[in-house]
Amino acid sequence: MSILQSLIEQPVCSAGKSGKVLSVDIAVEKTLRAVEAVQDIEHVALGEAKNRVAAVSIHAPMSVPPFANSAMDGYALSTSSFEGGPGVSGEWRIPVTDRIVAGSSEQISLEHGTAARIMTGAPIPDGADVVVMQECCKRDGEVIILNQIPKPSKNIRLAGEDIAEGELIIPAKRLITSRDQALLAATGIAELAVYRKLKVGLISTGNELAEPGQELDRGQIFNSNRVYLNSCLSRPWLEIEDYGIVEDKATTIRELVREAASSCDIVITTGGVSAGEEDHMLDVLKQESAELEVLKVAMRPGKPVTVGKLGHALYLGLPGNPYACAITFMQLAWPAICSTANLKPIAEATYAIADFSYEKPTGRTEYVPVSWDEYDDTGRPIAIRLGKSASASLLPLAKARAIAIFRSDCSTITKGDQITLMPVDF
Ligand code: AMP
Ligand code: MG
Image (cartoon, rainbow, N blue to C red; front, side, top):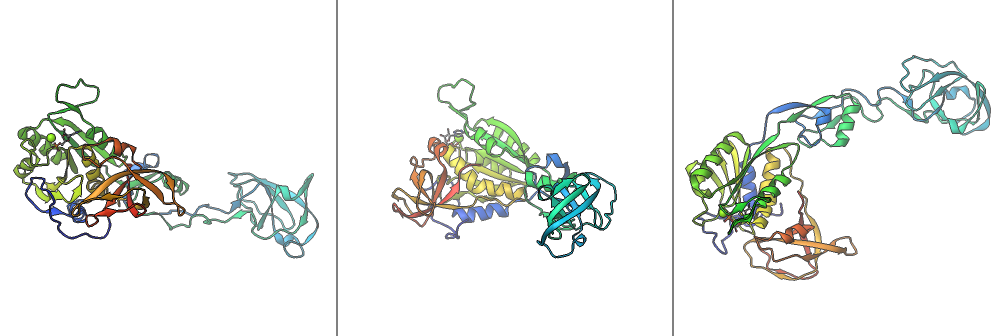
């Protein structure tokens, strides 16, 4: 997050709910404070570990490579076979007495003045301190001919050269990557401890909602938040319990929210968090004795976003308007979800140059979808503004390459100003 804004900002227009309007930073802080991180650990096979959260730090149980081996196809020999230092030219004929291939378990000791044919990955025989590439010598029957004295240790990979036994290879609380999987495999680890999957319940409220694929009745719209959130949350470290659409009826919503809170770590609802007559979430939360942390946030869009605790579950009430839903998801829900999963959110801010001027009222942080085709001399995108940041708009969000964040205390953005961007893809 950016520098802390004022603790409590004054509403510029009321969303109707009573309660303090919090700055974005304070709202995020309060939301994160309400998080109860998952503690349960399970073991998964290495092949299943991608994008799971490492529960413990892993130290290499062995060195890699486990033994000194050849980095090249060539000849292993000892530099003590030569008189003179590395690089000295001449002609040396060295008998080849052994042949060592990758996977060979034979313990071979080279006699002084002899060489072993050796393949890449094969163990270095005792008595050898260099591998001469096959391209750097001539073979003449059972003899190789060298014209230069090699440098000791050349083309030998030492035991532990890549990974030392005991070295930290995976720090706890981060996602396992495919590179990590390779690293773990190299040290012989077949399964690992990860945090259990986070369970997130999703509820779409609204009498007007229909699912794509259904016929739209008069007055209905398609549910876009549901697929958006499902898609954003589609992660191997997370399990979604999708409760679908629920009508704007307090008793029905209450039943479902209670069920979701009893079995999920996080419950996300969309819609119904404003103060209209058909916005029932606040009543339901009160009836369920939720501890409400955030009721209104000084942001545009997204002001009515609501956060609380429902028993052990974190409740995230996102506004129904699709752009507001997406922005509050990115700004408040995502950090909380990551934190519950024991992950640090890694939505790093980047910068661009505004190719537009813009006036905004102070008092609310604004989130403006932007895109760009060009960059300035220092590589910063030259950003154009998309749409009017209306909370119900989806097209600008879909076209955006990032979201520009205009702080609550900023009132004028002038063409050429540096602006802060947050990533738009989740
Ligand atoms: P609400 O937050 O329930 O007052 O809804 C605000 C606006 O968002 C209304 O115009 C709703 O029709 C719309 N809306 C609510 N939920 C969804 C949804 N899941 N998908 C698309 N639009 C929605
Ligand atoms: Mg509604």
